[in-house]
Amino acid sequence: MAAGLVKRHGAVRTDSTHVLAAVRTLNRRELVTETLRAALEQLVLADESWLAPVIGAGWADRYGRPAYHHRLPKGKAALEEYALQVGEDGMRLLTAVHRCDAPPRLRTLPQVQVLRQVWVQQYWYDATGRLRWRDPKSTRDRLSRRKMPRRAALSPLAEGRPDPATACVPWAGLEIVSPYDPQAWYSQKLTAAGQKSWIGCRDHQTETCGEAGPNFIVQLITQAAPEQDIGVLDDIHQGLASQGFADLEHFVDAGYVTPESIDQAARAHGFTLTGPVRPDPRARDHPGFTKTDFTPDWDARTLTCPRGVTGRPWKPTLGDGHERLSVMFPRTACRACEDRVECTGNADGRGRHIILLSEPLQEIQTRVRREQNTREWQEHYAIRAGCEARVSETVHTHGLRHCRYHGIAKTHVQHILTAAGTNIIRLSGCHPPGTTPPRQPRPATRFRQLCQALTT
Image (cartoon, rainbow, N blue to C red; front, side, top):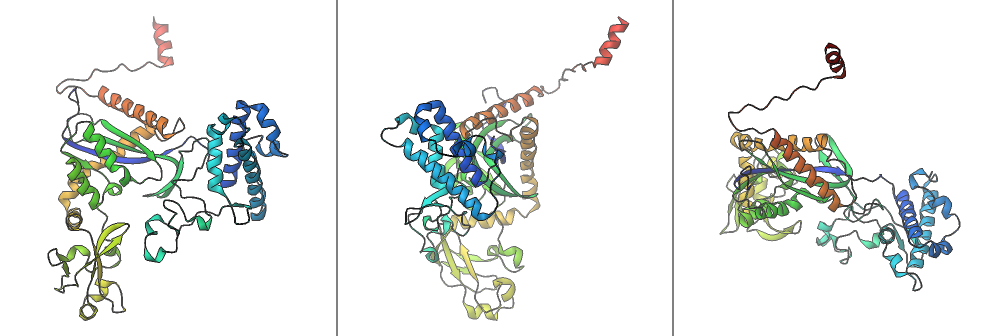
């Protein structure tokens, strides 16, 4: 900004890409084996004389070399028996290192701490005191469903993790998948090419756009892989505001946009967030009326359909943990309507049910859904497509896709240096208007050098 290359006003665009951690992909049996082996290797260096009497029979064969060199037993029962044997060995080591006569510095070693966390996540003790191998994570248990009435049977103490009564491994945001990088998590996302899964983190790049001259990367955020794009949007805006940006138009894709995020960006920072809001999910399956075709009366707390029928006064409800408004239309009116099947999507005579947002958010959602289908909006939004080229440049030219270090902090430094190098390269190709860039001499090949030497 001080050099005048970046203006405080204008437009910026943001996109994210997945980054692969510098770790090997391990299955759960390999994970516990390698975690215990890493702890043993660190304890040997810290205090070999203390570790020697703790080592049990068969430990040299199981933990003497990396886990991926092992050939695991065949069959489900044999695999579980092997996992429980590793679990017993790990518990023996953890018990020894936490005894009163053990040196306190040993229990603070990083790999010992990782061992303790991995054992909590992969093993549990039943009511009889027997060590058990946890089941795979349940896809039916979701934090957003915990407060729903039909989920009342779930434990209220299970905030932020799967129900402990099911003895499953934790969700991807908590589960350690490598002992050498506890901050490398598993995640997946839906792309144009299909489902993409990886272990690592996410990188969010923000660059200027729509100005004469090169576009510069002005902000970069590295976050955990399971965190969705919408979760980092406020951090991006706070960072831009602290850098002195104001009255920005921020172009993003659908992963960053909700009516709440549009409203928050305008109120908190004065930024205009431009991106497609998720379309009405009913519009794909039913070609009839969508929510944007209904007219709300915020004073009377009612909703009127395109046929002129007014529903009952709405009632407050919850949707995904947020306050919503529930509107029910009378069955008699919907049964007599000629557009009943296309509108309600059912043939059993039920009335239309619509969920509204609060007044300001609903107005934003309705407005953006209408605008994003117009040609003018799509031509204006086309500037965001440049994000794909910038991500491709940093990934394929400068190697941003692969981490060179362990941990998000060091990986973030790598991404910052990559962005700085990208900006320098872009700046080197920028020349004042009306001037001709200097012509670089073509390097001579070895054969041409030989020919030049012979002629001289």
